[in-house]
Image 1 (tube, rainbow, N blue to C red):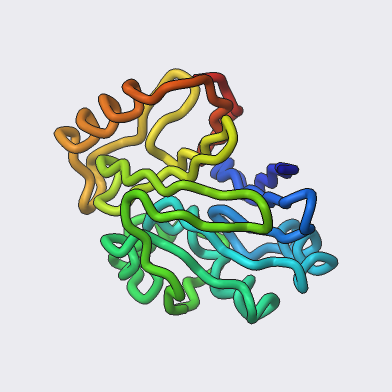
Image 2: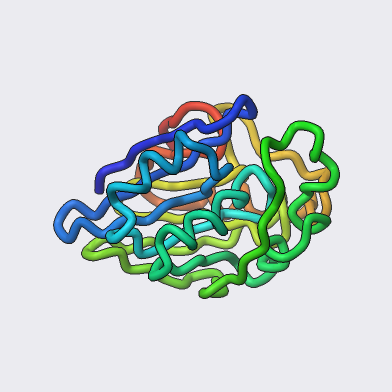
Length: 199
């Protein structure tokens, strides 16, 4: 797969444009904000975008979803069923708590796919496995494929996601970290903020 990282705001949220190189199909992971920097990247590939994959509920990972859905009407928005309410509620996306630092309003949109642990998303010949990793939020997930992990805000380079926002839980985070630690193999991790790193 080909991975392009886009940082679209001072909050340094990572949006990932993932392309299956054999089919040319595209998934956009965690579209942070619908700003020109992201629009300009999506415009020339809009007919190839098959999925908008969301790792969790927070505004800085979902606010671009509605705009991209309009640009790419055939793309399917996928989010864990425990975090799906974020797409239709500013309270559930934590928008209201951080409105002073958000560059545009939240436009509501519905999920097309409600994810559960162990689900698979097929992007051409690339297969993403969904791992439910609650802690940062109740419906936090990681997307795993071929030695690559898109971890959202579950894990960062040398840190873990905060657990003090709505539906966060340090107890569940500890359980998720044990689950991650038990994984076999070596991975490159692309997290919601900061640089990629090896696991």
